[in-house]
Image 1 (tube, rainbow, N blue to C red):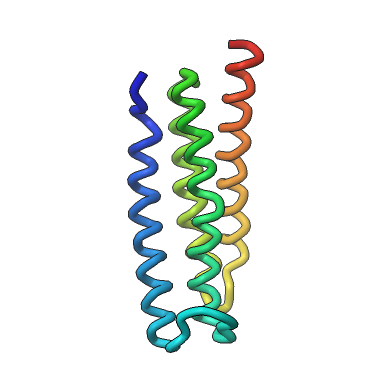
Image 2: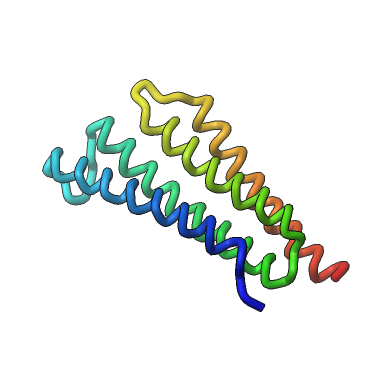
Length: 130
């Protein structure tokens, strides 16, 4: 079976990851800090947004891809993938603001956790009931 749903959303998230990476690189160059204690609010925010994305998006995408391979319902896959994309955009936007927009950060994490829970549930259900 070929993956047909998750790769589309992975590509969208890949574009966001590239944008966040380039922004973090530019901020590091502007601050002349390659590594180590940053101590600059804007730079710290850019680096943490990038890192948080890298911590969550690949793992959730992997679980969703496994669920798709286990023939999870397409509608639920689209819903979870769209939630992950929206959540990662919202989180990045909220944390990037100065002052921080906690509403976007909170809803971004809620949408990300929603996608994670759906992926885990679909996978486990495919083994328990499948």
